Image (cartoon, rainbow, N blue to C red; front, side, top):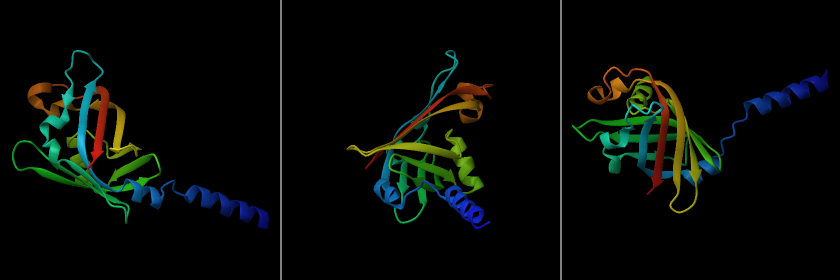
Length: 167
């Protein structure tokens, strides 16, 4: 009976462990600027969506705080005075950071720039360090993203590419 309880406790400990590391989070903490954010539809007849061109990319930043598990994605749009501040939870190991939208508004704001509400970016520590990711997305509503360019295209498959460079 004692052996079973010990085995159960060990299993629960393993299941409950997060691969996130506080040291890794400190290593990747800092401010990153958006370098690439684009969607390449699988259908050759549909033009690529350069999402970064609709943003003020030089001011679009991802700030990762090393002392807690949060990050802030600041997304100023190129036209108007619309700036989104998207709150994210972050977990990290030595090679990857995983981000999760905290609230419904944060999820909606990520959707506006075609990012999923949970996404992971690979970390390269080389100088300059960067966070990069490529995602196969299904059923993207490009009509909602840009009605004039993608009218009627409400379910498009393709590849989303993201890269942030550390400042």
